[in-house]
Image 1 (cartoon, rainbow, N blue to C red):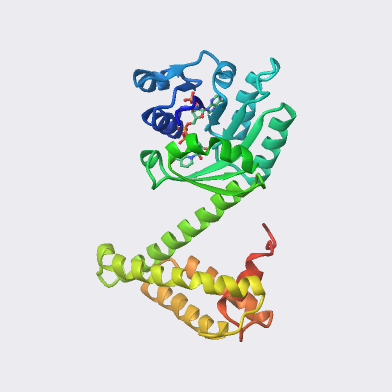
Image 2 (cartoon, rainbow, N blue to C red):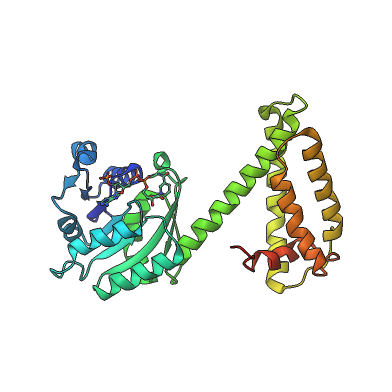
Length: 293
Ligand code: NDP
């Protein structure tokens, strides 16, 4: 389909989004505070709206992708007051928290806009390819109404009606990413002390990460049942290996913060009497906010 679409916010990400819509043949209206960032897109066929309010009114669907939710509200307000938001669907791809997403949805709803919240799990260069995963949450009918247009951006995932889900998954994805990268960097720092370079260690690390990832579905079953029989290893056995990790890190003189944190969390679970259970019992540690949070 080649439905018209508006993109508000032409930073690195917004330009990529608008470019993907143009490439897919959608009549695309754009607006950005710094108008010059629209030049390249206008040369490719985009129409530059003079104000954010006019951009909002130019298409039945508006994608907004700016620095934060405060800016989103400021810009959507420009379309307000003249009945500008009634009948409009806004999809907010700006990063934020789940609470901000739910609040923005309420705000938009009071102004009679349809609102979906999204999160982009990709960098600008892959937008418009299947590699770009874009999460959406909000009313299913509104998502389905625009699925064809949104498909130009990448691989769409609809998470559910709860407006906060896209932001939650976004953050949950970030902790996966940084945890894997931190683990790899810790290991790399350790083997480097014996003269092994990062490229030599990387395939070993990659294979381990893949193997561990394979445990997740089974472990998720334990978490969902709330039952953690030690089928392959008991936490008290794991903690001995953690002590060894801390000791080795300290002995070779690399940063031991991350190993110590791993051990500290497991130690607490053991102190709470979970030593004979399996690793996912730590979900209890992760599910309660700690003092000082
Ligand atoms: P940029 O900093 O490149 O762009 C920010 C955009 O917000 C610009 O269009 C800027 O306008 C606009 N803006 C900021 N303040 C105001 C204001 N007061 N009034 C009007 N417009 C304003 O950021 P990105 O494009 O990289 O990121 C945008 C969103 O996309 C963020 O929420 C980010 O987290 C998310 N994202 C980005 C990814 C990336 O790799 N870049 C990956 C995944 C998500 P102006 O040009 O005039 O300054």
